[in-house]
Image (cartoon, rainbow, N blue to C red; front, side, top):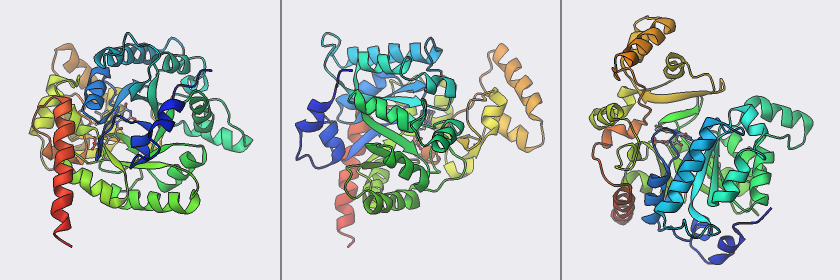
Length: 377
Ligand SMILES: Cc1cc2nc3c(=O)[nH]c(=O)nc-3n(C[C@H](O)[C@H](O)[C@H](O)COP(=O)(O)O)c2cc1C
């Protein structure tokens, strides 16, 4: 299989960070846009990378051959290549990553015949992995071998093809596993994050430093970059992530209001109008139960704005009734029961801007904040 990346891996040996060595287009401090299925897309990812950030194209989880999300990923990677003016240069790796969710075991087990050829064809420089299926992982551990579909086997396949591999995790134990299996980038996702995450996790304030210490202690010889995700929406958050030991920050919720995002109009309004994220968002499995989404393993829940369905659930309405009300609402064209996945930083997200402007603004604000902080010591 052709190796796509060795050129860029070697191209900037003296770069200030590992990520700027592997993605030479990036500017520091590094702003990464999260993959957000149904909300971010190839054009958004391209705009982020064009502005010196790192854009991640969302892939979803129905990734077995013929899977609906696979077709969507194909279209979005194509759109990213076009937006980056690379569509007449098919062999040039794209300065974006593709973000895949691995929790559908059948798709993960068929990774080599399903998603891998597509990645090789479109050649994003990186691949982001999230939420491996716990049963597949347990099977791989029992057998002591890289069972097909396991994180270890998928990282192996991606490395063989030359991709930089990013793995989003929510605990020190999961970060250690990802590092053992060869992850190049650990994305430490804290409890403030919007969307799906480990039900039991910690804030980036404690997660990032402990993961950093673990990487330095257990993997002193390995070059593994660490970035932070969860509740980071502006330059202050990015500056904090750097101080905690990360070399960049991932922003999801902030990009929900970018012009390029495919965020639904109702969700845009909710994000723009919601304040005080600790009170106004909630981590729960109820959001998925009401929508009838059963794909997420029991270890995960998701953070979303408290909406009509969740409020009614809290006052005792059974899930089956809420599913019925959602369906009836949808049939009437009433979107007020839509789930708006968002992090606790949502209160600071109220302005719609082009994604590139968000990247530049956040980067400059982070630099400014770091300079201000120097006067405090
Ligand atoms: C609307 C939305 C959709 C998301 N979808 C995905 C996804 O498809 N894949 C993934 O790995 N993470 C997904 N996430 C989680 C992000 O990767 C990231 O952890 C999170 O956005 C960071 O927190 P923040 O939203 O507070 O910035 C999603 C987050 C949101 C808000």
